[in-house]
Image (cartoon, rainbow, N blue to C red; front, side, top):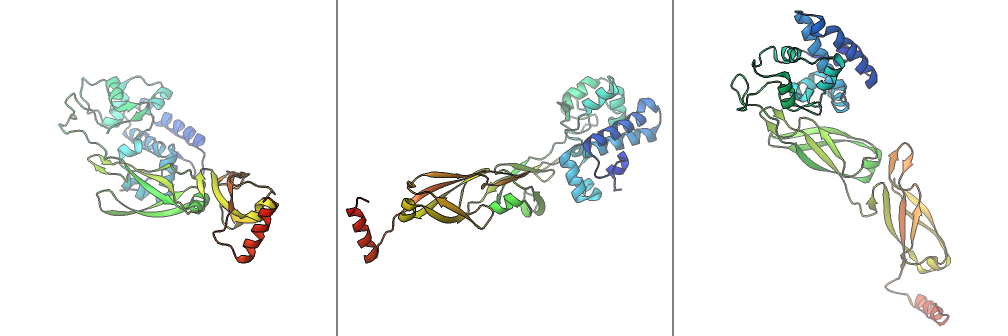
Length: 323
């Protein structure tokens, strides 16, 4: 399979913005549109080629994967159906002022569709909210295409929990995971962005169950591992801190664990009550752009289970003083 450089096809660079990619695509699409090049097969091929390039580069997730794994690997992983899924043909047709099914039929079906199948029927059957919902074939009422073959369908999507440590969520991480969705064991590398919210789903296209028309998608559900130090209310955190009776009475400084490692010095005011909650602004989970959640510290007075004779004597004297 010959490699396709989608950036080169559209005449743009890798760092080109989405808006500039859209402008480049529309310019080329108008230039090579079959209505402007009647009978020119090379123009038709070019028109299909730029549509495929734009379908990939206009989709942030497809573009990221294309940039990550390269042209050859991308084309081996993704079928034409997967490339054009959610690609808004309706928007393109409106831009070109197209209302006829002849161009659609000629370009994407090669003129092979049945005579009694209208363009509106085709769009109604295979498009929903501008996104493709099937293969590039037309079907009769019996569910078979015009070659007598049953329609193909993608395999089921798969969801897998992805446990992450707090540090991995804070800093972001490249994870290599093993999956098995009925096709044998596979190793997949996935980049976890900084400050991702637990419960967030990360989509990996074409790594789900196998179907007759290709594989479904894999969704990794981010799960925060409990390290025993904090309770997480993303992006805030909570922790319980036990302080000596003397510190609760007189006040003082204690050191507590910090979210990003190390220790934080916490000032305990005199007369602090057990169960009192203190808020430490900006000491929670970093979310990027300088923003951080807060830390909520719940203070408990530590009552020793066993006293030394000297300590017991002191407590008795305090009791006589009303403490």
